Length: 371
Image (tube, rainbow, N blue to C red; front, side, top):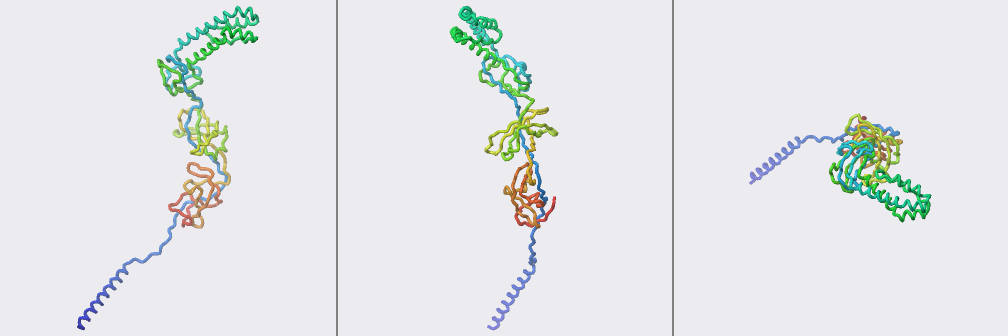
């Protein structure tokens, strides 16, 4: 019995010793704990030097011809000819015929009405000689000037109400103004170019039946163009009519023109909070639909500094480096360029970031690298 007890005790002691030995060996394999070190991020900065910052507004817009005419027909008939081929790209000199519509039938009706007027005045001359001898010479001269091939001469002015009533009773006034109206309508059978220009759209050809209200084409003047430029309402006060504008084509190297502000709209675009400014420009190489970039030296902002837009966050916050830490600072934004923003509120010699480090936060440990 005693022997069994001794065997059990010895066995337990061996097991306990083995367990303790295993634990000691396992603990000896664990690497020693290292002391955690704070990471330091390198940042690029530039010292602030406040001063007057010139504001140059830049925008891109499309050129449109300042003078353009949408050609519409006011009469009906067959198109007969024009001084050119009436095709897109055709150039026309001022006063040259753009479109001619067959007017023979209408012209014959006009001649008939003129003949009726001539007969009425001739029949009234005998009574005018008797009742209004002072007016006879005036009406006789009018009849002599009445030519079937030329436009109507001006009507003689009546010397008295009695003479006016006499002429009215003979239906001369009514017939005269009917003829005058027909002459004005006849002039619409032929359309002439109001300026030297080029046809950019042609919708009819000779032989086409033209109806009143039908669009025939579009003529533009190629010597003067306009560009619409949206400008922020905060900067519109710095612009004025007549101000010079530097322009260059977005797709042509070394191209440059000088334009001027001709109009400033009074309506604000609700979506973009901008106002359209219109710039007039002329010169060789300009074409309808061409895209130009405009630069306007608007004004100067005093005691300001220009920083990269990428370092601005939360609309008006920037980081400056101070004592190897990032310090958050509030600024007032004055004007946004394509890549930079003009701000006020920074102090001279502040070290403002030029690039935003990842996962930055106020109090972040940094190493300063000056640009």
